Image (cartoon, rainbow, N blue to C red; front, side, top):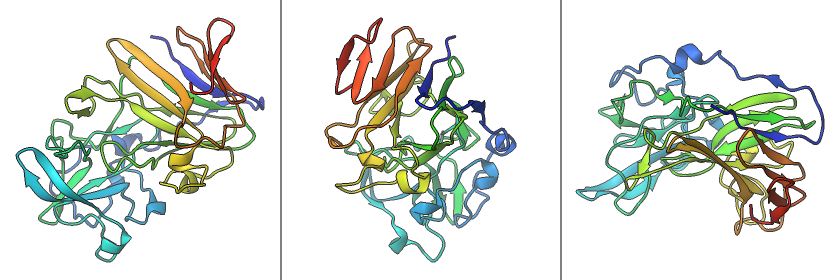
Amino acid sequence: AASPSVVAPPVQNKVQDTSSSSNAAAVNRAFPDGEIDCSTFPSDYGAVPVDWLNLGGWASVQKPNVVEVSGFNDILTVTKNECQGDNCCLEGAFCSYACPEGYMKYQWPSTQGATGQSVGGLQCKNGKLHLTNPSINTLCATGTNNVNVWIENRLSKNVAICRTNYPGDENMSIPVDAQPGSKKKLACPDSATYYRWQNKGTSAQYYLNLPGYSVDKACRWGKPGDDFGNWAPANLGVGWTDGRAWLSVFANHPTQTQVTLPYTVEIVGGNTKCRYKNGQYCGGDNYSTCSTEG
């Protein structure tokens, strides 16, 4: 299969594959269902802490207060203020986590939000962490193996690439830190096997930030006037469905209309040319078809 990549090429640094296999043993380790205390973040099983959110490493903690036939309702999004000391994964809550680059969280309950809210992660029951998708006995898994999607950073500064915590609180808190000269793998969901929202297949959305921003600055929910997180200038969509990989780069409109990326993003390896440059999203044989949206 083809191997599309996304390239940021203005500065021609040598690109090296820096994707790490150091987490391979942990991320492929079967999770001991119902044995680990809720106060223990499960990094020994591949989960990657996002400490800057101040939730004990968790990406989000969702505590439904109402469980109905139609699904969960009155879902509390736990903040540091609701944590019990250092323990934020509260009894009855669903505790979401990041995975290493190239992997995605594969734990979410079959019961979801009654009004379309997504809920994901392990559940804390009787003080222990439980799998919510027990057909998968690991916390993380790769998406499709039919295609490889890589970010190559040829800039002189890092670029923080932040994936939506989905299913979960849907903040863009799942980090990939593309350092100068590095090559990082992006997880590409298979819509047939990954999380389904209202019985519809889903893909992954990444937020592309300005160069030089650290992941702890960029991979979080921002506020009006910011230029990072949900206010980042551009998005990258990645997915596999019906035997094809789908990649797209597009402006983060209407959320961010004041800031544009100062580097080029080019999708290489697909059957259609696609490039962002100088505020224009262009396709066609000679990049002759352009728009400001993507």
